[in-house]
Length: 468
Ligand SMILES: C[S@@+](CC[C@H](N)C(=O)[O-])C[C@H]1O[C@@H](n2cnc3c(N)ncnc32)[C@H](O)[C@@H]1O
Image 1 (cartoon, rainbow, N blue to C red):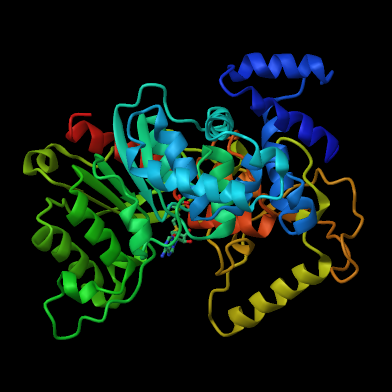
Image 2 (cartoon, protein in one colour):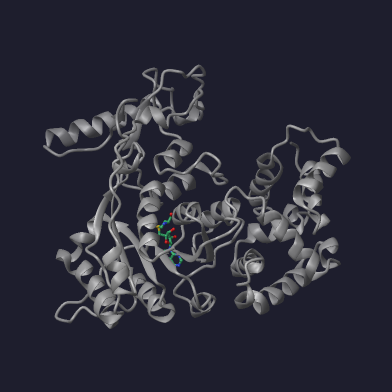
């Protein structure tokens, strides 16, 4: 599909507003003589990716149409509008209404696009609505519980909880690139910094489950009780404050395994003390869960902390049983030849080998690992040699043309990095999960995310305990 002519054709379908998408889509395909083969992904997601890319050029951006322009901006204005529209049909949009309508008005006033300025509020909302119902991961048709997604990243919790019939009524994530991925998959732009009163104030009053994979920070609690006030200034404090204010039936927190021994165990002790004694929640002992025990070919251990407002719910809760089926890297490996850019240069490979030899001589372990098709991958993490500890052998390469002059020659041993799609699969994201960002961001996002099946299995037990 060529840009920009085709993109405008595709975007123009949204002006049908209330006409159902599939009907409008059929009509437009005929009108513009577009191929029957054109999938929704090609029609909607690819243009969205294009527009995201175009935001770098203000001149081109001005020529983009409304919804996408706003999505690409990814700020709190976009967040409030998308939360409003998303929740509209489920009767819980009231919280966002006033701010959303104000944001739409401001957005129209500032837009250089005259077509947009002439549209009514209803038309603009209809455009959004139409877009959002066609994303890869829409809200389940008949949701059976509501949850919020804090430190949402790219929505690993959201994929898992939507699979269980959950309706996400609020999300927050401040990283611009992660927001792009989130918006492309869920049709909702998360709010930004959760420490800001504005963002916290946007959380609707009622929901059953709070999810948060909050970043771990050192607590300085020396000589003190290790209570709520001692955690002030940390992201955990924000989570605790939201639990205290909204009193969800249950919460589900995820963190690195290292939290258990962080600061000599005192960080976790403080967290549990706050949750149990200051907030009055019933918190079973946290559990270390390995993604590999839930069907993924990745050794990834994380600590899960769940809590319940009611004692009886906590008593009914059990962490999920491991599943018997084990998988290996071959189960997630790309089906076809991957691009040459993923193959290591001879120079870089040499550098890794020399580095390893130096460390081995000193008696240190130094991680670069080649995972065989029959093996389980190391944890995918951003930084800390995450990619190098997960190299693979793949002899299907046919094009040995060096990608850049600086990189040197492509190695002939078939050694390559895993692709972002392989990382997505290692974390249990289905293939319909769209990756709209550059590789560097994608690796970071999947490395930071959660193992979806392990989250889903645990969330299922939480829901069972609270009778949902
Ligand atoms: C460990 S990751 C969580 C990933 C997520 N669970 C997922 O499935 O992708 C923590 C996330 O918190 C975000 N974050 C950190 N501080 C934040 C803040 N003050 N407000 C909003 N998001 C924040 C980071 O950008 C990061 O994406």
